[in-house]
Image (tube, rainbow, N blue to C red; front, side, top):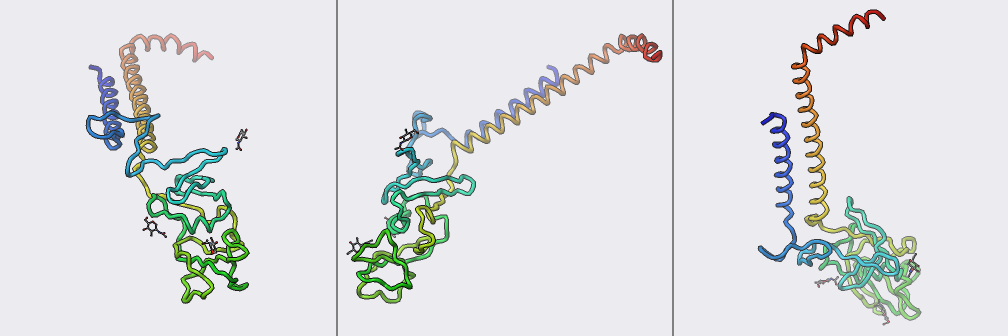
Length: 243
Ligand SMILES: *[C@@H]1O[C@H](CO)[C@@H](O)[C@H](O)[C@H]1NC(C)=O
Ligand SMILES: *[C@@H]1O[C@H](CO)[C@@H](O)[C@H](O)[C@H]1NC(C)=O
Ligand SMILES: *[C@@H]1O[C@H](CO)[C@@H](O)[C@H](O)[C@H]1NC(C)=O
């Protein structure tokens, strides 16, 4: 066998074996040994979820939180692992009050702090801002830092760890609704990407090997044609010198 052909074969088998090793790290989704392989358009719902389900409504991308309901997905940053949400009801502090992330793979992107939601039958005065979207004419809802004592006209609704207390300056429908997720084995995504990179690297190596072997073959041919060539250049040389 030609040495260059052997070189190409060696490289190809190396690339194949690396690709197979990657495949072994990301086995196809299936229900057990010998069970059928599952791939697109079917998807296996695993207990440790591989995917977070999004859906469409009114041309918006939505996500459902089991204990809460639906929120609009404004944007997703995959490298910083940040999910920016919007509250369609435009009441972020109602989301903070009711969203329980403990059984989801998500947590707030921001550092959280414990606040107590108070529901008061009278106003706490101008020094504390009530949450407009949770308050009414007969009740006033506030977020306060763990109160030493709750006035008797107030009822503590719940104490929750949230990114921000209510502020009228920060009251749009998305401020604070940033979540991050725990890193999961990125089966489809990274498996596919590293495989693609490997295949490209392999192709480049094979192309390089082919170029090198062509060069070797060419120089061999040149050597064997050495006699003819020297004769050929002797024919040419006098003409060049004449110019
Ligand atoms: C969604 O987009 C389509 C096409 O732009 C439009 O015709 C339709 O009215 C939109 N639906 C809603 C609920 O906004
Ligand atoms: C969230 O849900 C978990 C599990 O159901 C529960 O233990 C926890 O108390 C809840 N947290 C809040 C703030 O309601
Ligand atoms: C606050 O109290 C009022 C009156 O009892 C009630 O209607 C309202 O739903 C309560 N709000 C919250 C957020 O618990």
